[in-house]
Image (cartoon, rainbow, N blue to C red; front, side):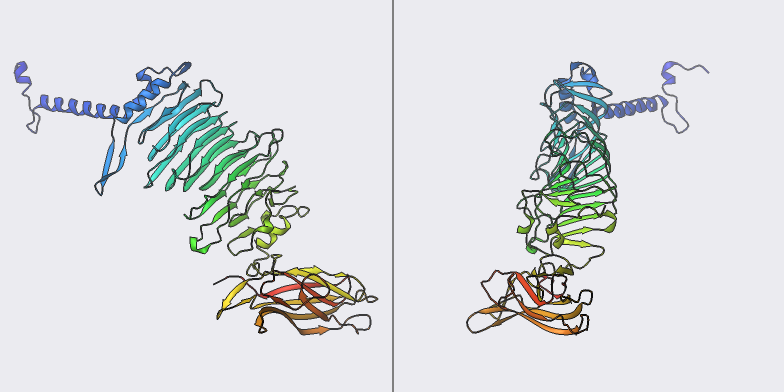
Length: 556
């Protein structure tokens, strides 16, 4: 049977549908699909970019960003307003692209630059590459290698609802700053994730101001300059990152992280969390953290803690002038170092204070603690930390901190070596904190302070035959009709004679305020005296161990 062309167009399939129309509809659908796919992305090469490191491609990339902005992907109306709007993607294929001025990237434009290299023209750290200030919202940026920029990417958002920004595969070489999140004001309520990253000869890889920044699976090289590779003024978690130092530049104090708090903000925990990181000793190691964050000790703020948590890390911090893991310019609420190794030759200990910071001016508080487990203590030939910081210490073998506000040396118990002006009387002096509380309208200080004093007393001519005694010493509040007093009291619990003939006793003869051999057991309300002296029978070979029983700990 012969069919004409007209008849052929009327051939039906087994379902009775015209085959010609079916083919035509399929072509239209394929065309629509292809057109839709193209409209969601813009390739810079199609607009004239060369990417051969022979020309300035800035304007072509800028045009691609502008065109991508017109390609709306989706929107979701919530409560009558646009809650989310996404736009197109700029695709920048493999190549080397010269950038001579900053390219502004508006909200919703993503950049796929997985194989692209951007070189500043000139590469003298004076040019920003991509500026996303106040325009980031829900962005996913892939790859990108940046060479010679002031800032590779400046990114922030003015939208505090579900802002989520991802950088996957970014690399920076010889830049001043890699990623700059501008300020806390424009980065709050934002989750920034940076993964699979590389930073080489870049002074500062990231300035983090976000409520939550996560750096994972990366490699950072310090240039040895007078600064930090990471600036933190939000909350930043760092895990699975290798840190490699360079030789210290002359006169520099290099460190890995500068940690700050946000003044005047009461918005939850802020600080640094380090897990499974390796801080190397190649070319000279350096401190992990310079801490400038202040502790928040006001419970009315909802305990907005500033923290430094280090867990399961390899720590080499020994070679610079700041021979410590953490250097304090102020004290945060919590410092924790645990399950970490590589700590050695730290002449200043794990935690030390900068010369500009006097930790003695910080009041002991239950809101401030330093926790260091035994695995992180390092060599016993070097100090654990500055002496004054021990009052904040909570370790696995000294777990009690309830009395640190009362007993200023900060240890659950402490042995004091006696001093003696002759061979019959000895004394020890220590500090307790005074605190005023109100009771029935009458201020009474240091109510309820109690501690045991175990005295081991050596008497002249009887060395090696020490007498022992145990006393209960208290501080009580009272009124003598003229003023409120705080009174020191002591009572003998047990006494065991010593000496060559077991005829000497370790008797207390006085407990009083001040540092001298004599003093008053009572002190006025206005007195700021914190020194307590125990005088007893003994000499310089004697000692007293203090064990707190009850103190001003502010525990509710």
